[in-house]
Length: 162
Image (cartoon, rainbow, N blue to C red; front, top):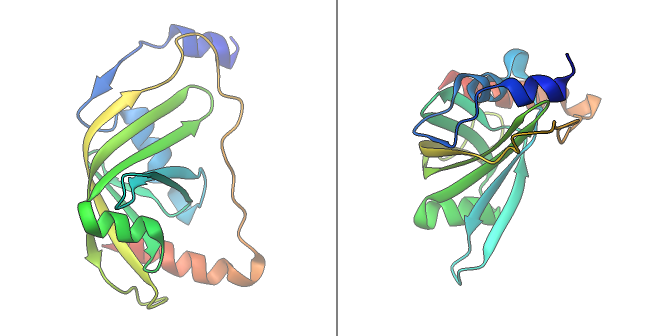
């Protein structure tokens, strides 16, 4: 059976109050993996939507996400200001979801870099955006340069270790 056929046979769900098992597994990312990239959407003070890619986003539990964010980033400022966030995730073969929730800063400065904070997002709703027929062939991938591999591993350890 192809991935597309498997995706068609999987039970379709519309909305959930927490991460379904298959979404949680993708965002749990074993071995300090960076991928897949998620897109975090926030709202600027003037109401303009803002999106940014994040490789540090992790699922701590099915109802809690955690990410590292530069403190001078617009996403950080928006999340501090109003806490509203939507996270978009695409993962082969059949995960396309929008996760809405409220964010808060839980660590103002990480040990690895004082310009980075850790935020948590309480999951309020997960919306299934996947077509009922079809498959996602690839996710957004990010590669860490060798000279920064140690830094990223230390940072991910801190995000996961809270």
